[in-house]
Each structure stands twice: as C-alpha cells, then as structure tokens.
Length: 302
Image (cartoon, rainbow, N blue to C red; front, side, top):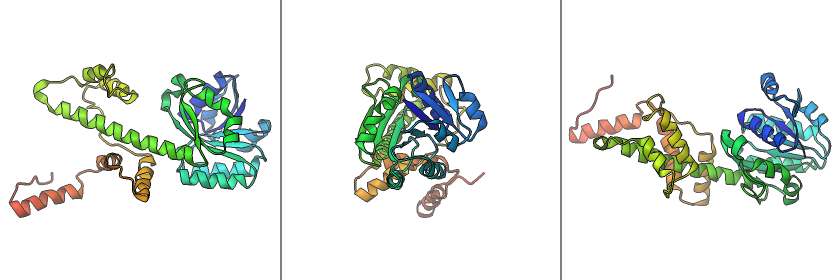
C-alpha cells in the first residue's frame, strides 16, 4: 500500500521505516528539514509540505499523522481537511484525547474523508519488535487498510485490533497508559522498599533479572527495570522528576465522570506530581502542625 507519513520524530520515523521494509510505499513529511534528510532514502521519499505530500499520493489516499496532541495535530487535521478528497483516509497515531478524536472524525466525515484514531504502544522499540495498535473508527475503513496495521504489529496476526467506533482507539490507549502508570509505581515502590533494607545489602539489578524469568510479576517493564539498574545500580545519576503526558489525567477524570474507582491509577498520577515539587508547602505545614499540637521537633530550612 501507499502511505503518507506526517511527523518524523523518533516514533514516526521508526514506523515509516517499518512500513517501508514491509513493502509499502512511504512518502514522509516533517516541517524539520533535518528530520526529512535523516529519513530520506531510496525506499522512503519525502515532501516539503503537506500539500506536496497529498499531491504525491494516489487516490484513495492514506495519511498517517504522528504528531503531538493539541495544536500540532489540530492544525494538521485542518490542512488535510482542505487538501484531501472524498474516500481518502486520515489516521491519527498521536496520544490525542479521545474526545478530540470524536470531534475530528465528525469534522472530516462532513467532507467525505475517513478518520481512524490509532492508539499505539511500543515506544522506541517498535521498529524491531512491532507495535501494539488499538484502532477506532468505521470498520470498513479499518478493513481496507488493515495491511498497514499488520505490518506495524509484531506479527500479521497479533498485536492489533479494531476496538470500536470513533474515539475508542484513543480511549483504550488512554486506559492502557493509566495502567502503565500504576505498574511503574508498584515496581518503583517495591524496589525502594528493598533498597531501604540495608542490612541485607540487596543487589536490585540481580533481583530484577531473577524476577524476569518465571515470576508472576515478570513483564516488559521489569525487563526495562533490569536494564536501567544494570548501568547504575542505585540510579544515582538520575533526578526523581517524573513528567506525565496527559493520558493519566484524562483517565482519572473519566473515572470521576463514570464513578468508577481507580485508586491505584489516581495515586500513581499524584506521585508524579509530587516528584516535581521541591519542599512543598503541604509537607512544611504537616511539620508545623506536629510541632504546634505535640511539640515535636522540626528541621529548619537551610
């Protein structure tokens, strides 16, 4: 198949290469000239604008957007709306809010353009091992371009699925990432607990490596934990500052709206917030209150 790829960050570039190596004709675009130069090859051609990208594709066109959520994706969808034709298909593989995906589907549908929201997991390793793909939108649109997903997934029969109507692909990816928050938090707390038991002088990397095989807590995240600890057994070269990309917040808000309790996911999100604070007011107030009611000692600021 022929695919236009917009967005040549690391993940977009890797996906373009996997599609090309799978026999698909890929035409790629990024506003960054250097990004286009890095990916340009005899197998992958590039365009200098979205309009040129559209012109190079044969109808019915298929354009895969791999851009950050928010304004970059919004602006690109607007350009595609004006440039594409009836029967063309737009795929959004960014981590968009599913509500935005529903709105974009409705917008493009008015112009006869198909829209699929594609939740993608696999990170920087997807080029070698394949991606997990969660696709929402109209089933006929999915079926027509299914070979694209078969090429991107680990095997033609595993790792991808049509999950439901418009918006559902990004909704499922949102929940996927929220679960990931909780799993990461559990690993982090467990390893910190072991590290605190100084009398045993535990080798955390050895334990992680042991758990990778046969243990009920084995996972790819545990594989990555072992890898991270192999270079720096106590991670002393890192600062404990953890960002979030939005999906955890959206999932927690959904849990409130649907009255579905998600305590582990919610607390793991709040832990990320805490990691970015330096000597927060709430902790200082707790110390002050203990001194006020019980005369407990406090540590003055340095």
